[in-house]
Image (cartoon, rainbow, N blue to C red):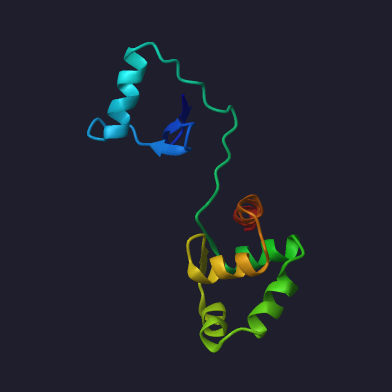
Length: 125
């Protein structure tokens, strides 16, 4: 089964996002499935945009808002020198950065908690 999404077609069996691209073999398989009578589910009415990058100020503000800033700073304080340097010099927080992934792992944050941090961070101006 498949579901429409603002980013393409979501294959529900494995949550793979399929781009709308006639050269893509997954998209071609989807089109065959539709031709054979498959019914694509409608997208969620309110898909939430989750940013991939926020400024350092926005990120630290989100950590403060969720009560995680002190824990994060304590974690950094007890880290190796390269981690301290990265934290001090980072300009933006990117979801895929090793620094952020290591911090999230050490704080045992779920994907949803990371999403919530980034969503909130983007509202900070």
